[in-house]
Length: 351
Ligand code: NAD
Image (cartoon, rainbow, N blue to C red; front, side, top):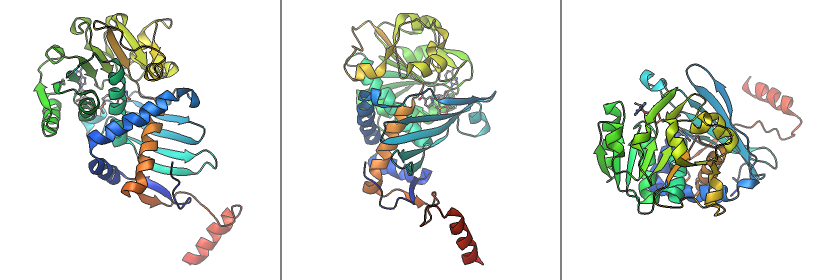
């Protein structure tokens, strides 16, 4: 990674600059490029420090810290998940994050990550589908048409060649919003009145709903042979989307098992139930899809390595695009031991 010239001033990517970055590169291209970063990092999975994210749960939602390091850089994300926020006019998920150099501990990037999380989650979904979805998949059902929806659809279109999206949400206004946004991107959209209607003929089913309970967005009879399920919304203890019977028919692929056993769809299964780590499929160590009738399930909860890849991507785009400000984040006296003297001199200067 290219080091920034001024170590004390930390590059900061605001929401405004992140939007500029997305619009400069284009959302589809950006997510496709992020897939290559994710792929590279998933392939060197053993190099990373891994821990389940640190979660502070409340009745309303969860606030989480997601750290990881590859020995050269350290990254973390602060993220919340509050399903009732949307009704109160707030985002369900907001985030920001930091990338730092391990050698001296100095941050090298501070960035908004609400938009970046939507991009990285969609890129991760596309990477999983690229490895697990049936060959020639062209139709995706998208259940849950909230903030993540359009990103998910665009990444699947760009990376997996999906051409038709069948949208369903319990709130028709969400479906209208997503249909309008996605039609403007030139995608074929079918608005559906039920989940059952949405999954008809779909090769990939993405569930991306927000509800703090064990919901049943998909029932067993809705899932036919050969489909790939991309389950995004079940990502906390007591917050799942699929009927348990589906888990017994599917081959299940996960990010980091110690975290997914706590947060994923598999939290309802016995701990000896077979699961496969996605990185081993991406690295070619284990076969993903074996036949046309197999049901594959990516039980996605969101893992720190994906944020690390996204931070690494944004960091490497800084110099090329210039979409950042310099933030006076680090106290950096000329004499490193004279922190107090620096404060005093500043007081004298201002009086
Ligand atoms: P959002 O609140 O903007 O949208 C959620 C949508 O789901 C809403 O439109 C709501 O009406 C709809 N919904 C709720 N219950 C439904 C049901 N039973 N059937 C159909 N639709 C239903 O939230 P978002 O930002 O789009 O996030 C969606 C989910 O994805 C959240 O649960 C969030 O925690 C999760 N998420 C996961 C990851 C990950 O890495 N796995 C990343 C980001 C978000």
